[in-house]
Image 1 (cartoon, helix red, strand yellow):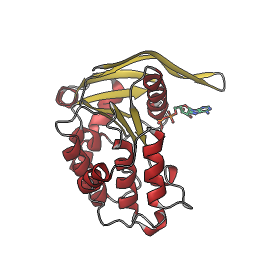
Image 2: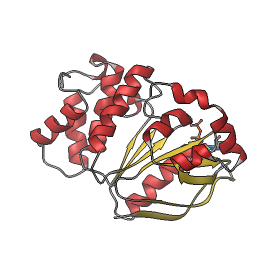
Image 3: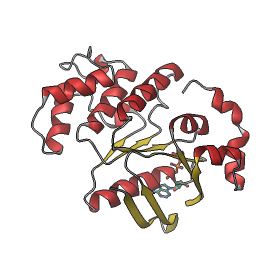
Image 4: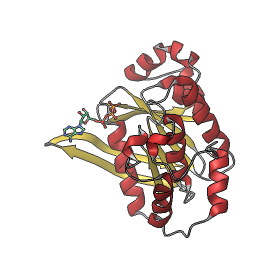
Length: 227
Ligand SMILES: Nc1ncnc2c1ncn2[C@@H]1O[C@H](COP(=O)(O)OP(=O)(O)OP(=O)(O)O)[C@@H](O)[C@H]1O
């Protein structure tokens, strides 16, 4: 099922920070949302999550840092149970085993609290929690920026493999064009609260149209980063 949202907008403190915007996602499509800091990427991500959920779609959100998703006072097992409960799902060991294997977190001790796990493993756990309900769309907002480049690349590789041949679409929000270009088939560029470009990744890189897109592409050396 293709997901569509029309006329998304947002205003804060009397200022429009997201101008009326339409977005769509095909099943399994991988889309990058790029733009400078403050261009409105996170705002669009949050508005999308709310609007699609209001339509009845299943949408999961992965924040920048695992600290935003994990309570330092609760065990990892508690978080997993809560994620299942929030979706109205009964505990399912087979589902957990599959996701833990896919994201290489089998050796994590679920009785421990987050600080007993490495940052990389915490973030992979948060991604696994987001995938519990097989969402229609996974929105990831700078999901690896709190990780070192090697762990970040490994995490994205595992997610790539897991999503292959699945219907879950991905929106990867990042200011890092290099990261997005390696992972997505379509790029959306934001500037000052508006989408200014939306194109297949290869076409975008070969021929950016707008000033902002040209400026992002001018930093081609970013494409050399491992993630
Ligand atoms: N509560 C708020 N009140 C006023 N302005 C806000 C508020 N929240 C966000 N903004 C402004 O809206 C704009 C878009 O913010 P947003 O966080 O969506 O951008 P972003 O592209 O995700 O930035 P970054 O890459 O730095 O996270 C920014 O100029 C920001 O200062």
